[in-house]
Image 1 (cartoon, rainbow, N blue to C red):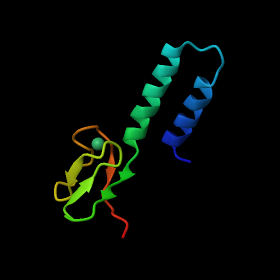
Image 2 (cartoon, rainbow, N blue to C red):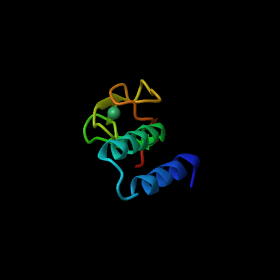
Image 3 (cartoon, helix red, strand yellow):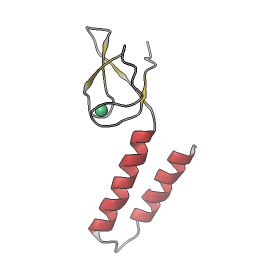
Image 4 (cartoon, protein in one colour):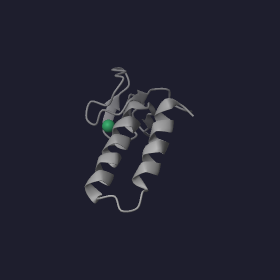
Length: 84
Ligand SMILES: [Zn+2]
């Protein structure tokens, strides 16, 4: 388990505390989402045009010749290795 995964696990334990106000749980969820976007996710392969692939988080089409480290729309870190 890497450091990001450990932190998400810890935050999930914290937010499971009974009696927490919803606003505090929302803050934990925000932190979890931010950490998840830093963890590279594999790009989604689309049928059809092999140059166009989808962001695994927001499904925006990304062009593989740009090879950006992050989705321009949602900020998800992208792993461009496509599984065949
Ligand atoms: Zn995205």
